[in-house]
Length: 333
Image 1 (cartoon, one colour):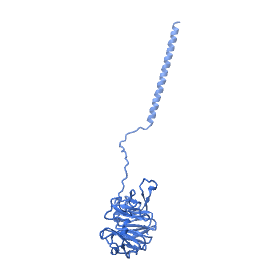
Image 2 (cartoon, helix red, strand yellow; image 1 turned 30 degrees about the vertical axis):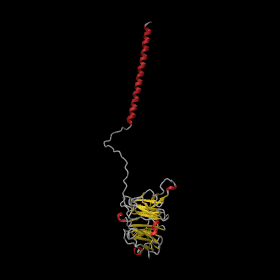
Image 3 (cartoon, one colour; image 1 turned 180 degrees about the vertical axis):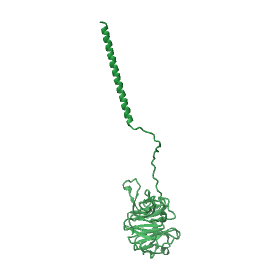
Image 4 (cartoon, helix red, strand yellow; image 1 turned 45 degrees about the vertical axis):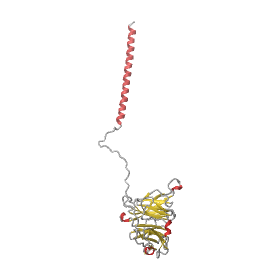
C-alpha cells in the first residue's frame, strides 16, 4: 500500500515537468518566429549605401546683375515737341558753343535753323522748353559761362535775354552738377552729378533728374525732398511727358533680349504720402512701352540721342533721323 501513493506522486511530478517542458518549447518557438519576421521586414527595406562619388551640397547663389554697357552722360542734343507735327531741337556743348535752335513744322521732315547767339549772346544751350511753334524758352550760358535765360516769341526770328526768369526756372548749371535750380532757388541734388533734368509739364514744383550713376530721382516739392532712387539698366536720357517722364535705355543681350536697341521706358511718380504720411513723398515705377531697334553701340548712343513728347506723340532724334511714334514706341514713323 505504501508503494502506490509514492508512484502516483512520481507520475504527477513527471506530468508537471513534461507540461513545463512543452510550454518552454512553445514560448521559444514563438520568440524565434517574431525575430525572423522582424528581420524579414527589415531586410525588405533598401539599405543606405555609401556613394563612390561624394555629392556636393548646393548653396544657392545670387544671379549676377548685368552691368549696363554704358553710363549716362550730359546730353549733346536737346529736343522739345509742341504737337504731333512741330518741335524744336538744338545741339548742346561746353561754354562758347554757338546756339542755333532749329524748328520743324512738318513732322521733322525739314528743320529751319535760327541764330540765338547772334541775337542774344547766349551759347551752350542746356535746355529747351517749347510752348508753341512761335514761342520757346532756352537755358544757355552767357559770356561768363553763367546760366542765361532767353526766349523767342517769333519762331526764332529774334531772341532776347530775360534774367528775371531764371529765379524760378528749373535748370542745372554744368559747372556744378551736384546742385539743381528750381522754383525755390538752388538746392542740393540727390546725387553727385546730374546729367539730365526733366521739369514736369503739369506741376511747377515737380521734376525728375537722371544721375551719372544711372539712378533716377523725382521731386514734387521743388527739390526740398526727393524720392527713393529708381535704377533703369542702360538708361541714357530722360524727358517729361504729359503722364510723367520718359527714359530711353540702351538694350543689349546682357540686360534685355526684348529690345536690341533703345527701350522706351515710362517712369511714373506715385504719391505714397496719401497712403502712408510717414513715407517718402513720392515713389517711382518704370514700365517698358516700346523699342527702337538699332545696331548702334550703346557708347555711340550715349549723349547723342534726344526724346520728347507732345499730344500723345513721341519724338526721337537719333543720328540723322527724326522719328515719331503714336503708340508709345511700339512702331515708328
